[in-house]
Length: 128
Image (cartoon, rainbow, N blue to C red):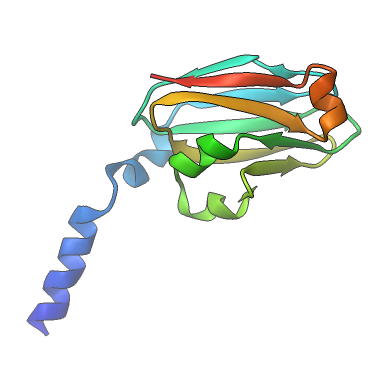
């Protein structure tokens, strides 16, 4: 009986500190339009939990893609289902929030499909 209890305590202590900080993490809005992502440069701090709220105010669905960024970040448990193949799909007139802890680096962010990227729906994420 003692051994399972020790194992549970060890797992609790080893749990990422960020997981305990999600409720107080700052929230950043990322506006998705047919021809832009705003802000065009998203600046975050490495290792600090954040919530990214993807807002789609248009009548068209949009996808926010940042494969390398999402692959390297620590995502909040339930939010892993929102990020598929490095993309977050946001239906018309709605929003999706993803909580994560970003890793340092410079990452590309873009909209999908290709036509929207060509018309200006792209930018970068800078994590320092």
